[in-house]
Image (cartoon, rainbow, N blue to C red; front, side, top):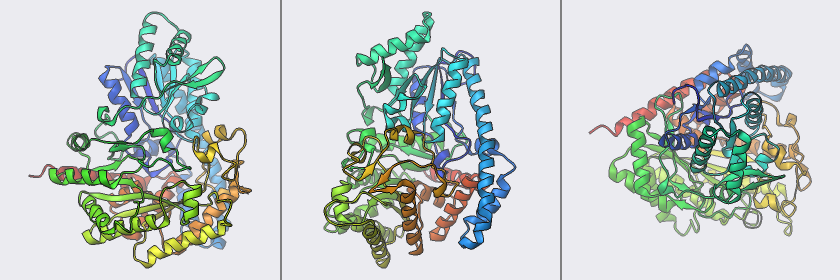
Length: 594
């Protein structure tokens, strides 16, 4: 991956000029998989991944961050509305000024990358696209590369393409997009480009050839333009047992929490609001031997002992097998994963608690579970959830009981969608849903089984879900350009939601900004009950690994990391990431002690 001319590929992890989330800097699994595939083929390539705290710190350095940090303490430090009101205008003005500074820096950065593409005669520019501003900058880079390096083929992939599919290419300047798994498709495209350019073909001829092959189904997972239409070639998913380990670089400036794909997709896969089945396809369970080999390889080669399991929802049957293998082999790690409420959880209580005890003994430290709503009519008729309120309640309770029995703390995060669509035939109101959600959480609190974090988001139709395809049935009104707007929509986390751009959607006649206010009301009431709000399982894992213990520690980590993101003063994140990496290395090296 050393820099010299005539590169086959430059792969860019798209960037918006500042950190978006605490997990931005975690090990990059998707790029790691592509890097492994390209290395195996002998390609000459560059990885441009700015999602590293040292890069963020140097890139965003500005004269405003100190004052923004001070204002964060005032505005988000728990003071009354009357106390913070005099400072809100200054905050908004400084955020606008900061946006201008970062925009100018991003323009220079985009120009720099485009120049590298030109100077190194890069054949293919690959872009991992994300939401909002990162997608807009992906388009901006593409336009600039088209101007100064017109023979470079530009291919987009990543989460935005996986979610928005053909809509991603409809109004974008990319030449092609790769959907879902890209390692085989990207390799095939690079081989075609190399061969045709060596024979003197121009980019137009290359595009025509690739389009012809896609039309014939000889290139899979490719989104392409065919005359005046955008189409997608047949989707092919690689069996987990055949996937290579991602290629990570040691001491690469990332946070040493690695991703393990222990399963792919969701074994239920019928929720009406969820995009996972469209992205991951049919559920696949990983091979236990291969999972264990990858964990041990990562420990040995990378000095990493912290992991995130990537599956949409890991069933207890699989997590038990993984736990047994880890314990039998004496592998010492800590990890987080997604779980689903167990069917008939109350009936299976004793066995469920015992299963979770085993998994915790193997190093499980945080889980995330979708509750969505504490109303059975909504769960069945609106969510298509396949779980009852009782199933969700007893699954959470079993997780907490297992934690108590083992004496090992387990962070449990649960999510709610509020406001959400309502059944049309039984008089349920948004107010009733609010009350039932709060009653559910109060019940858990009374039983001493409080989840450690409650995540709350408003209902919105995501591409390809039933809520989107049959949006009228669920009470949504969507504009004609909804997908193109959502594709580029930036959630302006630094500003009051009432000032956000209007998304022009409504639910039961409630406009989007009013939906956000309803979400905020539930958040407020949940906080008043004593819950921590909006900390994910992976952020729980990060907080604990950085030494932030107990409810107070989790709250402190959440507040300080939010302030760092809002102010662009990343001192706290730098220190936290250093502690996480030290702890990850400590865990890894416990495996080498005889």
